[in-house]
Image (cartoon, rainbow, N blue to C red; front, side):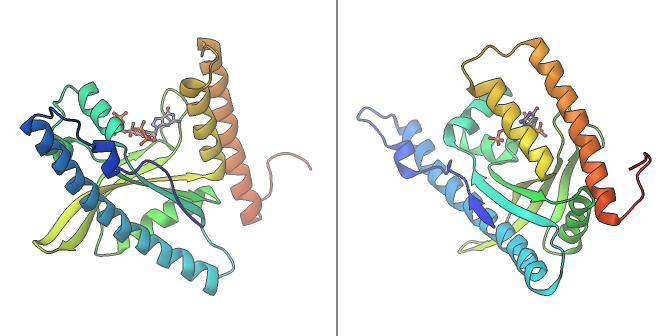
Length: 228
Ligand code: 0O2
């Protein structure tokens, strides 16, 4: 299943009020180009994942992919990230400093499926991994778990071949559940997010780590360490 999430950079996001300076106009036009180029890279990477997903669905008993989500980072989010990192909001800085304008989440069934998908993606000659962060082996302080890859994806446009980064986050269903709810609790709910909440979420993340290992073992038919 493929899910395209909201958040594309739409033309109306950059509608220009009267009094817009030439610099702002240039930025607005540049954003249209950014949107088009990264959307194209996203399409190429998603198409490859879809081909693999279809292959598993039609040819094999087990598919490592539960579902795939993808999105283009919103203009606001790009600007916020550049500003947070101390850069001016310019088109050049987007190309140089933002690696996740195009983002894909591959939600896998089992832990091993994540590393299997990583092997499949790196085996293709088209995509090269330029950066990797394994927050499964080394979860973040928040408790966040996922494998992050930045893929170098080639696209062919009228000017020739361009290579653009696409961020792929690989995680299990349980890790995805944790990440969605943690994000909701931390940033979106009206309640005050306390240090105690953060500690409890880290404990939930530890439990999810255990559950993922046990689900994997059940799938592989391995004997548990406890009596059943
Ligand atoms: P969105 O809307 O998900 O894209 P950064 O921290 O972003 O400056 P970097 O190296 O780009 O640095 O990214 P990092 O930390 O490897 O991963 C960033 C993305 O991972 C985030 O994207 C989230 O999707 C996810 N992520 C990382 N840490 C956490 C966490 O503690 N909780 C949750 N729920 N998700 C996390 P963005 O950019 O925040 O936004």
